[in-house]
Image 1 (cartoon, helix red, strand yellow):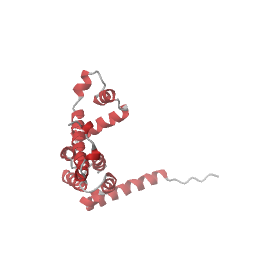
Image 2 (tube, one colour):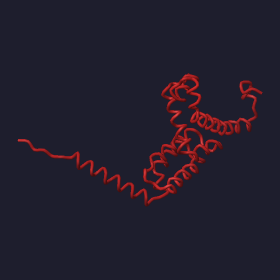
Image 3 (cartoon, helix red, strand yellow):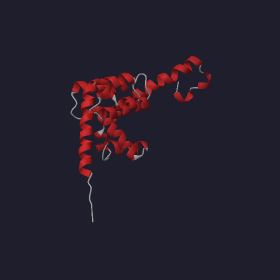
Length: 178
């Protein structure tokens, strides 16, 4: 049967209850597939004489070019740096808004962070995604280092405070004119 022919009004209540949940998982899987394809679509852009796959996508799907470019950048980020988050989408466990929040939180982690701690942060956020919406994930994501590695988080906070104090001393001056 075609999706357009589905008459939701005639669905039994249990089916109505289960369908949106199943469709949400499928949607996450389809969005991940779309991003995975787009991340490697340079050949399509070349074939169509587009600047990049984002420009091609914007033209082919009538998307705003800025939005299409942002989708391309996110696809490339998932493909290059956040394959575990992409895998969560592929299974339907993580939806696109959650994935965006998780990636933003991981990208905000300090640069010198060791691989084990970074992976622990990623794994913890993915576990939270099973029970939290994007807004709550964003709140947790902002403090994920405190959750996973409190000692490292305290050290990073001390470094940030030092930088802020140094900047304040440089900017702060008193001049007396007569």
